[in-house]
Length: 98
Image 1: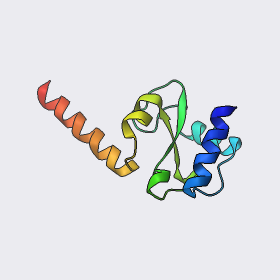
Image 2: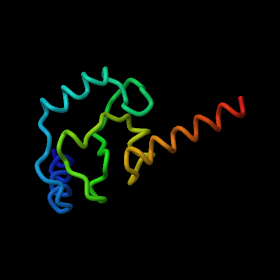
Image 3: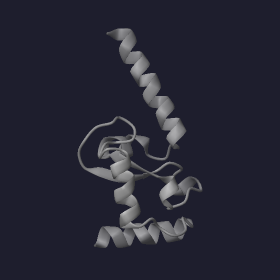
Image 4: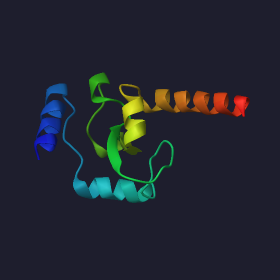
């Protein structure tokens, strides 16, 4: 409960606007088949902001993707496009060395 309260306070301070609902989150997770939107891994998912709140993104469902903990942590303050480009480079580098 404290974590959710801290999250709402952070959103409010950053001007993220109204938050998405639990129903919207569940629909989004179903749309992605219960998998991470970035690497497709199964497991516990976290709400990740396509455009981080700290960079002007909103907390509306249109700015949210389901992400595994690993991707959410690695993405940090990057936008969705920046992180996808980074993943693509990593994949390309791995293919060159295989």
